Image (cartoon, rainbow, N blue to C red):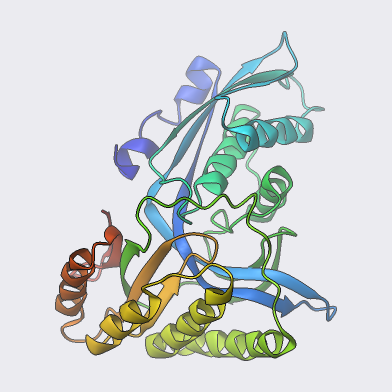
Length: 323
């Protein structure tokens, strides 16, 4: 099922007609930068900048109950049930608030490869419970609840700007810009068949030198966003990917970087707690689409699986295609 059909699976007016709440949330394709960064108070926080992928996502439907407490859902979706309970507590004082309910999840986000499946499920669930109660939560409130539900969350709910997000605290450290510069991204799974359990994946322990370098990368990314400098953005993402090799190595990372650069690309981004990677190209560069297509062919020849193609259509309209 495509992302478009997921979003249209249950029309918005169904909430009022059938007494349910609905919510949708997109996926992502890993990060452009992840590490530790100083907040305004000078404290170090783990934070990241996500690469959105709107062609995949989760649709949640909340069926309320006035007769029983607790939330029922698929046995494996513990975080979804926790998110629903947290959302119900937020709205407990409202007239007609539900005591509990049942959550249905429909998703086309791959699990365990770093595309934000759990955050997509959780965010869609919170939106569904809020929708039933007639509440529109702010993006920051969604982020706070998502982190409470799953301990660490990607900022897919903050879709109106590009942010450096403290994913274990649920707060924005910095707004880097309103949108990413024009990118073409050829995504792939670097270890097909491998799944990463993020709940058991230990947080990275960075050296003092790496901590200092993250400050340099943050400043460089800020400049890349302000000037729409895709080559600089690519260098930042590549540096972040290389640092992560100490914690979750990708055997073919250097081969993918070389492939991208040999075809005029800007660099590579990865899921720092997953297996996906994306070759980055400046969508404004002549021949970028052809270069990206050649790289996609080479990636498949390497035995890797394509995950997505994110970019700009020939007329400049936004285009993404899930592989």
